Image (cartoon, rainbow, N blue to C red; front, side):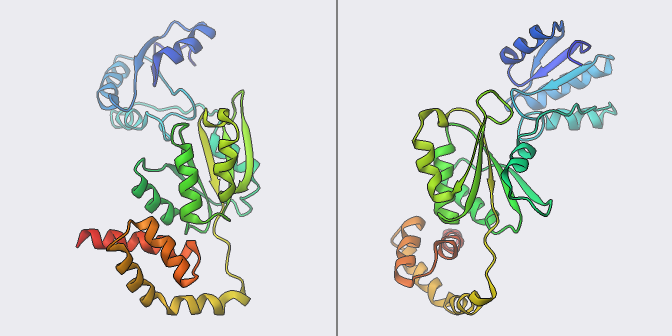
Length: 269
């Protein structure tokens, strides 16, 4: 395909040029990244209109899936041009197949989490309630913060499978509890290099014998809200949640998401 292409649209032309040289492609290149995708899409549509064959590639992973390219594909389709996918390695499916977490065939792919700490925690709290395995991506410069947030928001016992540099030379896959993940990462500086895919196991279902205890916890929701409201008036959400957990004996997974919801509500008033 790359040898036959007239043009190659690439996330980083310097990286993709190495591939074109390797396969002896004489295609010309056009950069398509998050900062120019809309304008590049129009240029590509114009090239397609001239009868040119344009290949879309990304540095790693699949184009248009948590990588630039979706706007290009949409513009090409809107203009009536054919879009032909060329299947290749998938970090999501590679991780799931090696995780042992998916036994019913269902999962949720959530892409990258927000970069800001508060938005990231809120997104994790929402994803953590999903009944299926959740797969997210993370970049090397944010992996430490994300693993710490997962342990804090979803609880240290939540099961994770981490995949680093999947389908590449330095591939590494490890299964561990969320509370162990920050220590595992810090144990080897090389682990903060490369892209990550993370599979998050769904919350453990409450057994029948524990339902009475769970119901009892629900009955104190009103008093918990009152306590959290008072704490949030003086403390940031993370500290308010920790103190509320100490005072009530409730688990982190029950208190922290509710703390974030109340903090958001109070901030909007």
